[in-house]
Amino acid sequence: MTDSVPIHRAPESPAARQAIALAGVFQAAHLVDELARTGQVDSRAWDTQITATLETSPPSFESIYGGHPNNLRLGLETLEAVLGRRQANPVVMRYGFSLMLLMNKLRTQPDMMDALGTHLTRIQGQAEHFGPTHENVVASLGEAYQQTLSTFKNRIVVQGDPSLLQSRMMPERVRACLLSGIRFGLLWHQQGGRRWKLIFQRGSLKRALDTL
Image 1 (tube, rainbow, N blue to C red):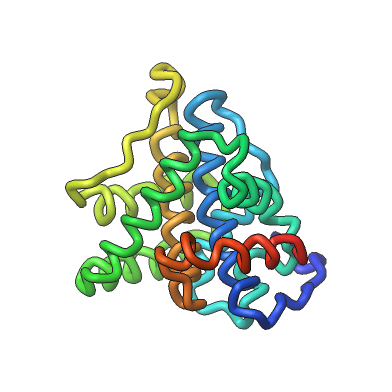
Image 2 (tube, rainbow, N blue to C red):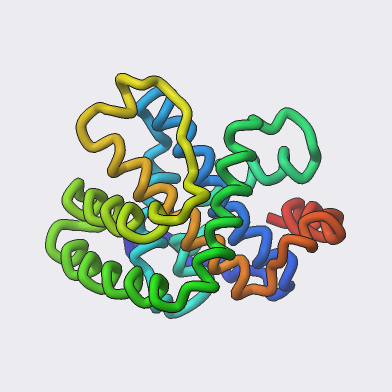
């Protein structure tokens, strides 16, 4: 993200902030599916996800996703389809909900949370030197995911083109993207998001999406 991106103040309503955070989760899910099937991703969405993962002490809510909801456009559109129960890619839905389950599991493991924080502090130094989306940084983010969240019994199994998934840097890119989904999942929880709200407060989330 660049400093020239204007900061658009996020809505104050909890539902809108939860919707934005959920969009980050489902944008990660969308990008993982794209990587696994085509090897290509939307560069703006990718940059947003990686930069957000490195932003562990954001000055504002908006700064996490680069100050403009359009940086989460893919995720907002995916979330709209999920909430509307229409034309939602079932694989992307599975990745998204699996990320939220992993996030909840992570929250019950303080030692793993600390280990992840230590990883991210070290990777932030790399990012300052190389830039946030440099392959060394992406590789380190992928390694952080592999050494922490990949050790859970209920891991996310990514489907796609086997030759692509085994190509250079692809495992690291996929894991880094999954880690970004966890980051936005934690943000969603910090903003008051809970799994039952996805069922019982679907309408308020959909209305919040309409305002974004």
